[in-house]
Length: 358
View (cartoon, rainbow, N blue to C red):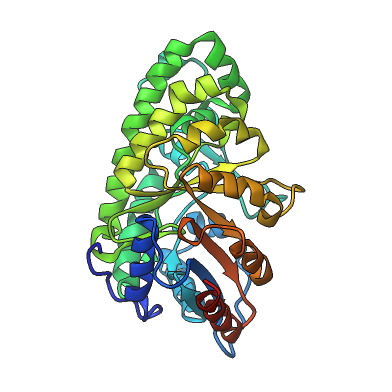
């Protein structure tokens, strides 16, 4: 087992959860697969989360943390679910920390995006993390204050790591980047080298600010050593050869730094990279996102089975009945389930069901 987990008041069984996560990373199970299930505690009605990114950027830091603590205190974290505070400013925050600006819309209050700024790669390179950027400084302040106030209660998540080619897409724009891959691949080589150098700087700086080596890492998955989701949403617009040239080496490098990794595999257009992902080093689990209108994870159970047969674990999300059905078809040592229940009693009964049926 890894280092003993830091105690959490909102997760009194964190040691048991940590043991199951460690077994999962080792390709083993203890008495059931990993199941992350949450529910409101008895008598608690959890308010909906709205304008989460706008709130993180514009509200008072202590107000943000107070709301996070209130919500976590009213939540039952069952199985391997771990109370976690996510400090993210939005999907393109890494691009913003490297010089882009956020765009907001009243029509999409729960998300944001970056405004590309690269007109000429030759003039824009080398890319760098803007240490002096006010939002980067705010992020580090948020991490440090969160570590002070949440220690012993919650874990702090990593950022939304749209790095590697997603970073280039955020600062250049996806359409122009598609053309660049064909028109000036050598320039993309240089830009990707810069992007890869930025990743460890961001990872280590935020981990230090959030005292993660002391308090633990949780970004959907939990570990005292390091844990996060990695991704490249832009990959749906790349050929397998391009993916192998630019993205896969970067992902494997990032995984080596992070230690325990789930790859966020977004949309059917990215399925062309299936074989390369199955052969990859360091991407322990694949989390496939079918896309709007393309069904649930249960509708893609054959893909899940193929992933497991290829040696990777999978994330399976669904309601209680869906994950029970999936459990009858998937290898229990190569899956982690994520779900929510209406009550704590239902969540506890679901965990008992998995023990009895594994």
